[in-house]
Structures are given as structure tokens and as C-alpha cells.
Image 1 (spheres, rainbow, N blue to C red):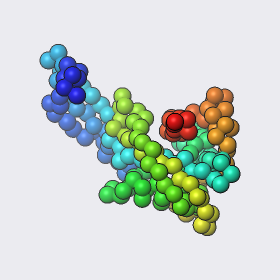
Image 2: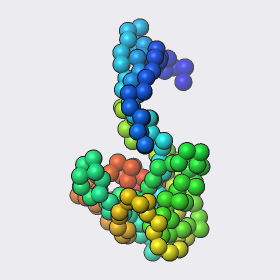
Image 3: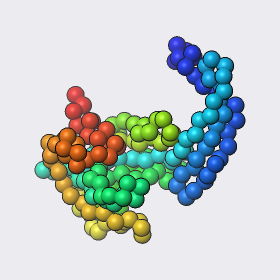
Length: 180
């Protein structure tokens, strides 16, 4: 991308402002393309996966889960954080089984998205899972509570248009339904 050189910012220094269990907040001093200096604050995130899990009837698995920062229940696709050193496909398999009780016979990697490019380095890897089999009980994390339900792809699209689905990773992943 040599044609982008006039847009590139260079790190002068970097410091950790906060390091938690999941997230790290960084404050970097950067040199701008025009030679001036500025500050960039951002969140370092380990990455995540989101899964379009197709039931045999063509419907998708969804979850209803309370999300504390916005203090409300959201309708979203199964998803979860990538553990350190874990392959993304292994994260997808683990999260689908833990959150829904399903395993999948077929997995397809669809792509990657960056949900919050202005203030986070988070990436979300998108997978499709087919040939689902209910393998048993959900194995939720000790601090995780959610309901599993199914929606047709059309009902999911309508839920986006009506404002019932506002989760960015879910909206972006649903876009993959229209892939040629």
C-alpha cells in the first residue's frame, strides 16, 4: 500500500493506561503525516469470533443476552472471545457448544471485521456452521446467562430494520447471508 504513505501515522511512544482481565487501554504519542504530533487512545482486545449457525430448517441460532455497558438485553449471534494461543476455528467450535449446546459437522471461514476501528484493535472472525447437532447442555461460563432461540434469515434481517438487532457484529455477519 505504498500509495497510502501520505496517510500513515508513526508511533513515537506508547504506554498502558489500564490493564484489566479482558481489555488493555493504551495511550500512544504519534507523529502525523504532516510532521505534527498527536495522541491516540485505544483499547487492545484479544479478538473474537461470531457464528452464523444454520439449523437444518434453514434458520439461524441466536442468543438473547444482557450486556452490562448498555444495561439491556440484546439479540445477537453466538460469539465469543479468542483465548490466548487458540486457533479461531477452535474458538468458534468452543463458543457454539458452550453457548448453545450445538456442535457442527461443517465449518466455513467467511472473513473478518473490525467493529470499532476508531478506538480498538479488535477483530472478529466470521464463521458459518452447518450440520448442527444438539450435543447436550450448554456449558456457559460461570458468569454468563443467555437464552438460545432461532430465527429465519428473513426474520433476522427484519429484526435489524426494526431496531431489534443493533449489535454491530451480528449486523455485519448477517451481511454474509447475501454473499454471491
